[in-house]
Image 1 (cartoon, rainbow, N blue to C red):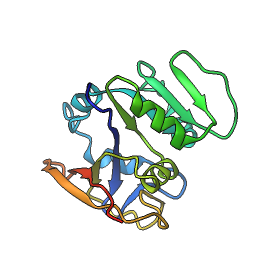
Image 2 (cartoon, rainbow, N blue to C red; image 1 turned 180 degrees about the horizontal axis):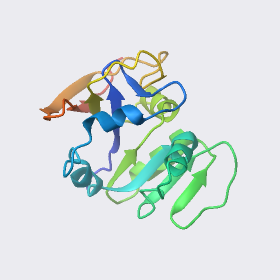
Image 3 (cartoon, helix red, strand yellow; image 1 turned 90 degrees about the horizontal axis):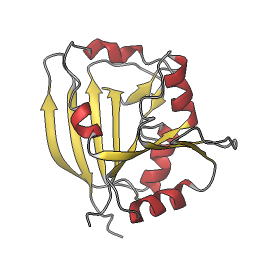
Image 4 (cartoon, helix red, strand yellow; image 1 turned 45 degrees about the vertical axis):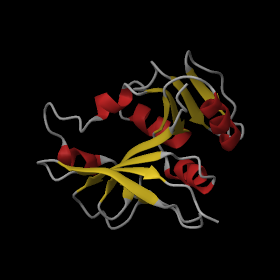
Length: 180
């Protein structure tokens, strides 16, 4: 049985922000191109579980779209207890314990879709196996930083770097073991 990996797949501005000060995501439209999904569909086929923060979940719903991962086992990380809706579970327990349990189960890989606080916790506990960072060619200047300070150093091994005509560069890294 293949070990399940936890993979962060996310977009950020060139200066490292995943959203503007007010959670704006309009900078992502700078690289929209008909027929180009930047490998997203191929990636989605490798996962069957999604972890996302409640703030990110609410932002997606506020944009008028249905939750795009309702066909997967989804865990919305929240502080407020809420009943599950089909395969979407509102989880207010210990995130680290949840991820450790999910990694022990059989299945495809686990996709972390943000937000920054969730990613910070997972990196702090060395639970992220791979990172896909799609770098958008814009400097936002401020906003929600992809990586927060105060976590241990994380060595990375570049798996691939792919550039696209609209200027997006997708970096795919493997998280290496931390040497203590």
